Length: 231
Image (cartoon, rainbow, N blue to C red; front, side, top):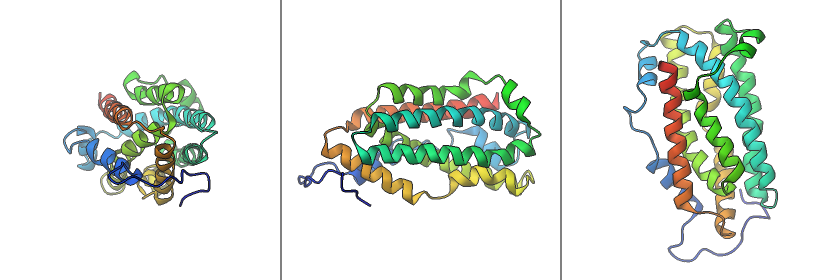
């Protein structure tokens, strides 16, 4: 899935490839099985149901913030269509996720007043705050790599939570839709990420060292989100 605007320069033998960089980021930045105790407790049905109420409240704010960050990244990448397309797809996906979250909000008894009046936890909001920082100052193509690594971990967590909501907590199907949305393999988004990184390599706008740093911090802030939920 390569657009006409993608870099067409041939790869030098031994030069980094988009697939190689993305695969290395996903593998190298993957969290360990013991790094997220709360998800393990959810999988075992040992976490209190109140966790899901707080998760819904926090995610409502995270989604709206991330959507704005992705739109800003798309605007910054306006001269690099494959990169902009990746962030435009992410922003659209956040709008879909917000709609899917309503099922969990309803199951937790949350209304518009509760969403508006909720005071967020700093540990939960560190992740979107860092995404906003990346949107302001990081090279967009590097952010594609960092986010791709984080999405792999987040998708695995969501698959675990979705299964537990059904089998351990007897939540209705509508409450699982948010987690199902992120747990599903996103082949189209993966193709967009590949095109974006390939374009970034062709235009010398990819710095794997910085992309890895961004991704490492995103993974750590992701774990802070779950830790703050557990407190």
